[in-house]
Length: 232
Image 1 (cartoon, rainbow, N blue to C red):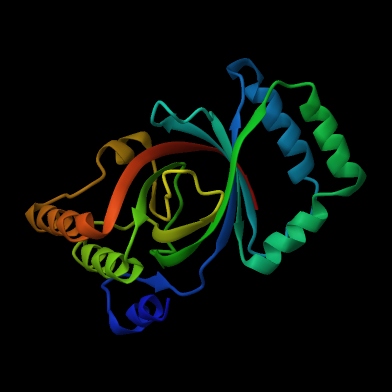
Image 2: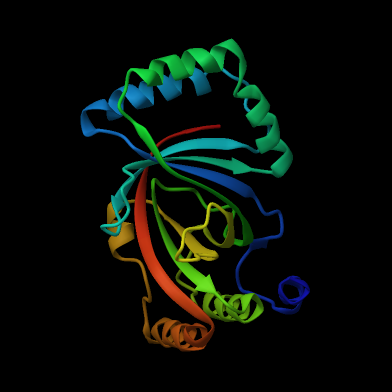
């Protein structure tokens, strides 16, 4: 971990990056298609009527592209500073929360998985957030080398103006052992399709990144999701 933190101070990027990292908790759900509207309505009724802790957000997202072994259709993502997430956990109790769950009991939605982690390096944090996002996951054997390769890659992606983050998964890890992810945000379906290297220099940087991380990590796949609604 010391080696990883040192990298944040040694490397200088042509990006704005934030050391104010966030924690997150992701609850993957299977929601039948004919009940998705009712699930959103129940969430909106509760989360629109509480005072959200500062810096904390709750998002309902829908998977758009995913591997065949991912059974979830939606996710609830809680994100923000640790103290804020703890405070929200306390708010998610009492009569109001029980009524929220009573509304969900009549639906056939099921929790598929529950995971948690934190961002490690956040870039372009001031960028306007879009409704589309992609996530790539790896099992990483050498965290410092992986972070170094990631920062070198980002240094050469001058066309990238949207929010992007490297983060760690530390709870709810599957047998595949996923430990790190790269998350990027896009404004539209078209932006999502046009992602990736935009010129020869970026293509070479991406190839170099793949060559560098291949010996010290295992790529486990990617997903694409669409934001349904975010509270706060």
